[in-house]
Image 1 (spheres, rainbow, N blue to C red):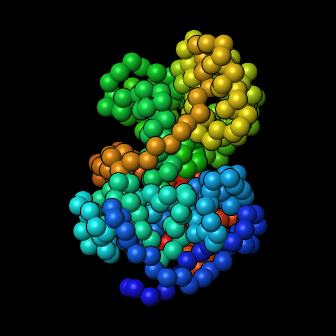
Image 2 (cartoon, rainbow, N blue to C red):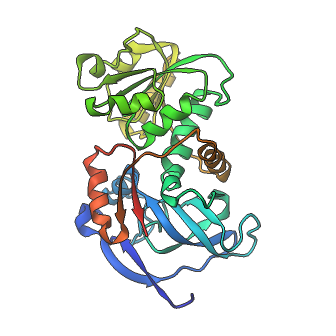
Image 3 (cartoon, rainbow, N blue to C red):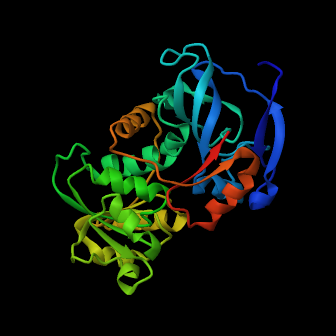
Amino acid sequence: MENRLMHAVQYNVYGGGPNLLQHVGVPIPIPRKDEVLIKLEAASINPIDWQIQKGILWSIVPTKFPYIPCMDVAEEVMEVGKGVSKFKVGDKVLGLMSPFSGGGLAEFAVVKESVTALRPPEISASEFAGLPVAASITALQALSQTIGIKLDGSGERKNILITAASGGVGHYAVQLAKLGNTHVTATCGARNIEFVKSLGADEVIDYKTPEGAALKSPSGKKYDAVIHCANEFPWSIFEANLSMNGKVVDISPTPSSVMSFALKKLTFPKKQLVPLFLLPNGRDLQYLVDLVKQGKLRTVIDSKYPIKKAEDGWAKSIDGHATGKIIFEF
């Protein structure tokens, strides 16, 4: 494949949204040590993708322009680099692209072996493409590592709240939480209440109602933990609804929320606001693949777009009202 060009979508400056995405021909990358070259079948967009374009991480990401966005990919292995032992040519896999290098919106990409997992060929790539960021390094890590929920159903029962439960992270978080010993209260818009109930939530409240805006459980339960997937809420609203040792896991920490966390730690409170710092690994990805195979986890697809219409999917994500995941297909 050396010297061949592939179709890719990239941008050259910060800002501009979907209007500044460019369709270009660029060389097919070459896998280096511990990398695999993959031919993409599907990719998924996450809010962090267009937030990077807006410049939210301008000091560190991207490391250079032009930049090919998107980190969630499901694909077939075309070539393996030196040192790769888990995968061979022809394997169906899913992987997580580094935000520093990007590369997910292209016909081919290279991905590290350590953040790649085998997937069953009989299930479509689109069913897996949404897992890496939203399910693996966000929902799963928030539940199992930060909150301490055991997804085998053992452990002390916890009452948890999941905000924006119909979105990309939220719809995975509800399903995963119900594998543990939890009572789940969820918030979403009125049109998605029945959908979120179908994911397993015990209580669902419309965030536009007074009760929803106040994050109050209909049963009056205090929350042992909150997975906060929505926009910022004042700490006072969370604090009033938390149990004595409750914590709020903020999946998109802002400078103000990190500062609030630091100030709270100085006063040694029992209630905590905890930023989620993401640690990707292939083990978690494989665990989620197995849950999908067992029928215990599913990706709800809001919409699909061919790569030639990537701008439309980009705009849909920025709009912020997708139910489940937005998928690009190749």
